[in-house]
Amino acid sequence: MLDHEANAYVQARAFQIQKEGNSFNGDSFFMKATDEYFICSVADGLGSGLYANHSSDAVRKVIEEHHHEEVEVLMDYCNQALKSKRGATVSVLKAHFQRKEVTYCSVGNIQFVFYLPSGLYIYPIPVTGFLSGKPQTYRIETFPYEENSKFMMHTDGLHLPSIKQELTRFQSIEDMSNHLKLHMTKRKDDATFLVGQLF
Image (cartoon, rainbow, N blue to C red; front, side, top):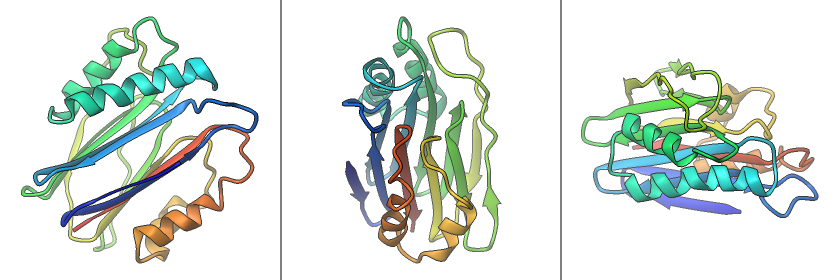
């Protein structure tokens, strides 16, 4: 499944495919651009199949319903939504256009890198573990971005030789997305990526 979100401040694409032989994808994503901000999330339900999908989709629904909230509040909502479910690893990014500032938080093994045209790579450190409704501590990171900054987040079903190289070798998000899909043919696990560029 391919999805696209864009306005004058951002372009983003997401793609996912389920593990071979499965009817349900255990990963979920959400992205939305408004005139004030862009928000996106990637969640990886533990395991694969239907119950993993239930967990990751609970995250997607919470972000979709409350996307106007700040990142730390959203992480709490996601954690609450995962009570009595299998659990999920979760990453949430929110870019505020007027402040030219990004806020990011992650619990678990979602891979993420942010690239600024000045040559700086930012790798926010996630909290280990997963969300399951238990009390949770978060590490919230906020940093400025430059025009034409790019970012990528993906679940562990996508294996890349170099995530840094993917962000610099392609000028457009569309070209990057098309190339990344070539790495998702083996389908040994659910796989999701989300890439974006801020203007």
